[in-house]
Length: 314
Image (cartoon, rainbow, N blue to C red; front, side, top):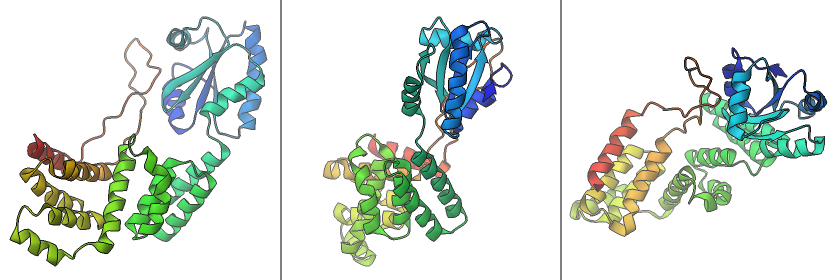
C-alpha cells in the first residue's frame, strides 16, 4: 500500500499502473464509511498476492487529484475508488460496498493467478530469445500457454517463434485459436499471412523456375507472388515487398488486391508493437491524471517501404 501525493502520483499511480493495476482509494480522516472500507481493501491487497497495488489518497490533502477524478466520473462523495490500468483511470465504485462486490470489481480488472504466471514465463522467454536460447524459449512459451491458454500475446509469440524456427505444422496448431480474431487485429492477420507463405514452401516451384518464368513474362504475376511468398517464408521481407511492388506497379487490383494485402502484412510483421501509454510531463499549474499515447520513432526501412507502397497504389 502506498500514499499518493502531488509529488509521487506520476511515478506511483500513472507509471505504476503500467506494470500492474493500481486501485486508488480516495478517503478523508473525517469520513466514517472510509474507515470501514480501508481495512477491507488492505486485506484484499494481501489476499490477491500482488496482482494489484492499493494506493490511498487523502481528498483533503490532495484536492487537485481527488477533484479531477470526481469530476471525470461524476462522483461527489467518498469513499471513492478508482482502478488505474496502463496509465489510465478505467473504472470505479463509490461507498463502503461489501467485500464480495469489491472482489467482483477487482476480478474484472485484475489478472488471474494463471495470467500472472503466464506473463512472467513469457517475459522469461523473451529474455531467452535475446540470449539466443531458442529451444529454452520455445519450452517456456509452451509452459506459459499451458498455464493460460487464453493469453493471446503468449499464443502469438509462441506461433511466431515456431515459424521462425521452421516448425510450420506446430505453428498452425497454435495459431488456430487466434484465426477468428484476425479481422479485428492486424498483427494476428499478418501472422496468418506469414504462416500461409511458410506452408506454401512445401509445394512451391524453386527459385530458378520462378525466375525463368518472370524473365519470360514480366506480367507473370502468379510467379512473382509465389516468389514473394518464398522470400517472406525465409524472412527476406524487404525482398518480398520488392517483388510485390512489381505486381502493384503493373496491376494494383490483381487477384482482389492480394499483393497489396500481403505487402501490408509484411509491414505489420516488421513493426514492433508500441507501448500503449506513458507518464505525461506535468503541465505548469495543472495535474495530468492519465497517461498519453507514445509516439515511437519510425523505422527508416519501414518508412521507406510505406512510401513505396503509397507511390505504387496512389
